[in-house]
Image (cartoon, rainbow, N blue to C red; front, side, top):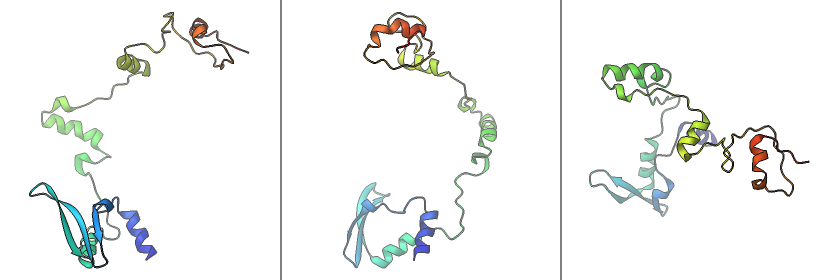
Length: 154
């Protein structure tokens, strides 16, 4: 029994039915909720226990079965090279995305409309040389020293 549970846990990424969808179990029948794709509504279905288990077992892959999510030009190994070619052949040039390096300073400027390296009080460029935590002096009163990198409390 333990070998079967280990096998199922290893090969099933997620269960075929969520535990919250099972509404009732009385020892003989299982009542569960499902989505009716024809009407778009959720309905309740009651099945005998063995029929319910049989419908769950049909979702368990065979031993040594390999799930292939993507293949061809969508395979993870080759999609970086082949997907731009497919987009060009389909004349979808606007879809091709190129990675552009953006420094962290520019990202913060774009998001918050302020330069993270400019002191908000005296407008000088800050340089980090050393970090020493103050004992009783407030950081706001020493903003010029911090901005110039001459901050040192002993």
